[in-house]
Length: 392
Image 1 (tube, rainbow, N blue to C red):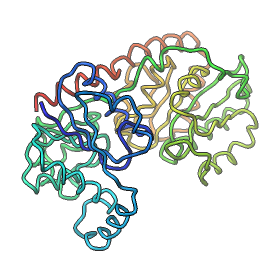
Image 2: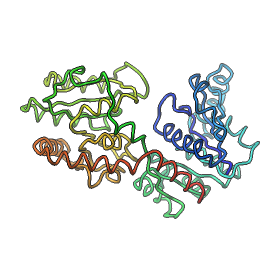
Image 3: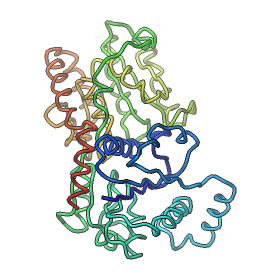
Image 4: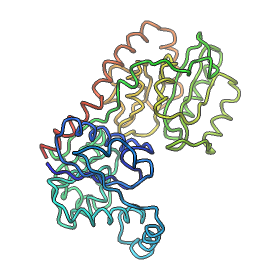
């Protein structure tokens, strides 16, 4: 098949700036390069770092980059902002990118067009007569309350959703067999295999006899970090309980600290060295930090579409405490302790103490975590992605 992949137009592919969707795209492109299944053209914004990326040497994956940063492009984007804003689905930046993609797209024939997380692009393509469109959704972006939802839904040949939770949200428009769940994935081996590393407990202010809980991911109000610190405050009489908080407020390598993270540090001051904030950690180093912990606590306070950090914790073999939120239970039901968000602080305290006091339970959960994680490996994900595309 001749396939076009259209990224939403914010971060580049390959994922040199990170991004969950972009990393997932890299997974199935690498699989296609290995197995030579299809001829694929990937449309993406450009970035200087991609020019030497080994993925560009593929003979089956072809990358078409849109210039959005030159002086000419910036002027054109601004003009679009002033003259087309009322007619656009997204902001002028993304809409400019899409129209540049469309200039090339309309010159070529594709058996299908896959849109990554961008129902707005589906709206425009369906309005222009395309009917071979597959939407790959990783967020709650298409439901009965979405703009032009009926036009978008009817113009799609298939909708792949990252969880049954998102599938159910799309189904509020109309239940349909063209909606299919395709669970997201990570590189399981990267997280399951322990490597020699300069990162150890002592280097970050922890000791070997500490009971270390780890939170990893972006730090904002939706992620439950404040509630986790509140639980730590209720556990302050136990000096061996420590919390390792990995991450920052933004994607990418940044040393900036927003007001929310500052408020968390103020909240944690009375616990002195019981809570360690690492700040931003490069993705390739995350497994080394996870392997320092005894358990993971990821108490999301919003309806997560999927939850890649949940899979990362499972792959690292960590007993997991999390919340009943969005698609999270689909990933870890039966292998993790899942608490309700109502009275979440006290629920977290009880769950933490239960695991702290029962090492044999932690061992059982660790084994179950590793086994469950393999359901979300990148190779299985890529194979399932192409199987779904081929059946569309």
